[in-house]
Amino acid sequence: MKLAFCPPACAICCSILSVIGIIFLVVLGALFKIEVHELTEGDKAPKDPQAVALGCFVAAGIYAAFLALSLCQTWLHKKQHRD
Image 1: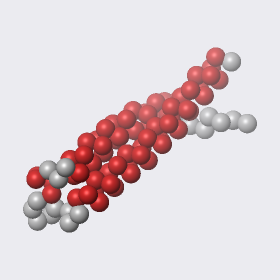
Image 2 (image 1 turned 135 degrees about the horizontal axis):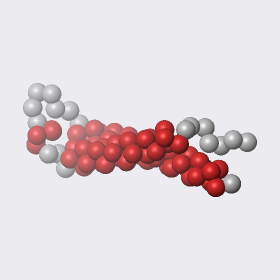
Image 3 (image 1 turned 60 degrees about the vertical axis):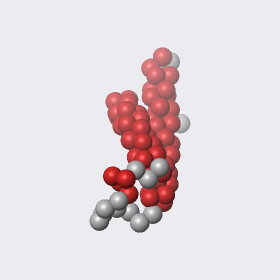
């Protein structure tokens, strides 16, 4: 059974993009959580910044799952290359 289903370059690219996405979303979620004035005030500001923060944290969790998947793919490719 072949478990590695994406090319090695794709797995590495997905890992890098996932790390960037996690960092961005965690920082953005933290800023909404502490209700930074620039993000929570004004005409286009969200009505519930805490809900926006939760959404950012959930999205970061989804990115973390994809990071784990892409790291597993990278590990499988390295393991297949050694065998």
